[in-house]
Length: 563
Image (cartoon, rainbow, N blue to C red; front, side, top):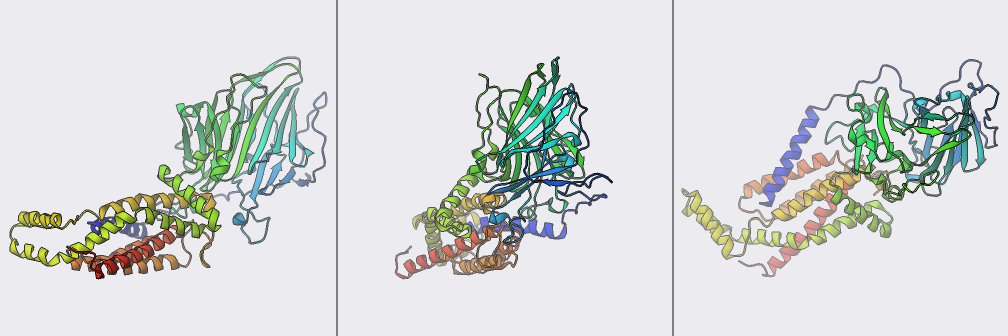
């Protein structure tokens, strides 16, 4: 029975493999105009070139009677931490680069300046944390912002629009991958003014990594706009390439919006506002496969000679579960009795299938990694742990198969005696099984348990940033990607073939011989495209299965398996 279950699963996977091979999804049409990268735009002729801000304070715009300056050259301010190299631009006071400094995120080995850049906006105008105003207060022109550094770990951008003075105050948070942002709107006039502020985060879909099917899932890197509603505990996720047809809207986009962000498979850029007011999130298309997610605040009245502050906790980093779970909303300014610190569940940005099973698997992997300090060895220990939990059920199945093999002469006699009566054959066969304590269904449970574990592990490897670019063996440089030399899948196929050849033939030796060839070929075929970490899991599992089969064969030779 187990072989039929495995055969059905293998046939399904084989059909998927053949379909993907002969009917691949159409490749995306590249945009007619080149998509801008993370470089800042070239200055206008005659304008001073952009400068890297050296860190010395600059005079903030003071307003007053002088006409506001709107054509300042771009200033780039760099703040470096042990985890991230942040680069801010005075054009809008936005984050234009966030390069990770961790060893696993370096694009060039040993080069700390080659880290993965999390800012994927197609245009600097769509860079993260840009602000705008709907009415009342005009949105400051990009060239009106001036940068200053009140401290080595902080930068302030200031702009004046009439009698309104606006500051964006960034500070590095002691926690990993975190920043703090206060947007301060000060009214220096004699009349109150109301306005609605909107904060946006842009992103871009890499046209070459859209995916399109099961076998391309390991290489796909879908960029999405995210909006999390605290009250309903639901995350709206819209791929950037589909924003035009599927914008962020509806009831779930209104209320206590805990955070908005733009993400990819392993990385997230997000803004978490204070939780004392109702907000609305939305989206906007900004180009081919590009768009922004927006966070719209309700109208606020800025009193004469008064100010309003919008505090944010910002996250720009890999989707490390511990780091995501630690993010909390900032306190309201000024503090109000209605403000309640809420768990805003930034960890929901991890788009994992079979979450209730995948999360314990990741926890176990992290637990074993604490001992081995190698994610590949952690997968091996996870496999042995799961096989240990299933040892009793697998042992019963293997012993039952041995007993069924010993009953083959009696089974053959029944088939010959009642060759014209299929129903009587079935009845007599079940009587023999019952008399000798054999269950033809004993092999189903281990196979049924293994399948959701494989799917959950596949999802974990596909989205767990902890394993991103984690090496194992000499040839595997990323357990979340396919084996570049196909060594592990081929070894897995060979070991699977050996295990099936060692297994008892069952009721149909011809069918068993066919399956011992077809199943390893099928599983090897789809393993060529899946994360190498999954192939490591399956290889270890089948090696354990061979050892367990040898043990059962030993018991049989000792005469401890009888019918």
